[in-house]
Amino acid sequence: MSTVLENLKTSNSYGKRLHVKGASEIVMGCCSHYLDLDGNVKDLTDEMKCNLENVITEYAKELSEQFALVTKIFYQMSVVPSTINLKVKT
Image 1: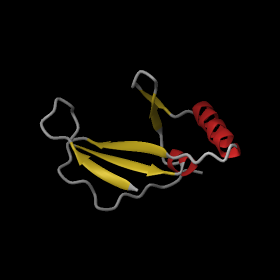
Image 2: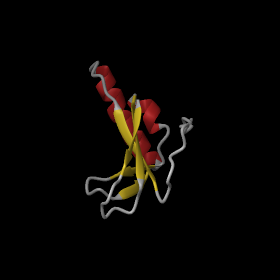
Image 3: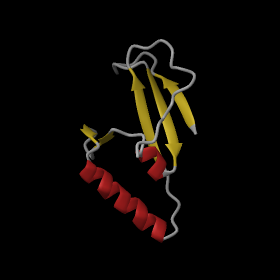
Image 4: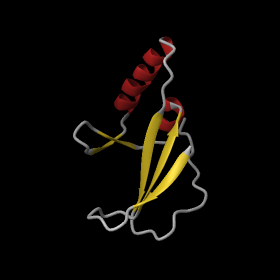
């Protein structure tokens, strides 16, 4: 599931954001960055991917349903593409 939010009259430097919700392991495969606990953008390194995969696996063992929420920011774009291809990296 996804939705686009338009940033109206705020001090942020972006115009629109795409939010995508889905299965954690699928959504993570589309990501190249993450936000740390302080809200700083960090590269999604192989080490962090491994850590996240371990967390996902542990939740799955407990039969806990989990999902992830990701955001894509569009800077200085008047129109967000009607189709965005989120390719899963393998």
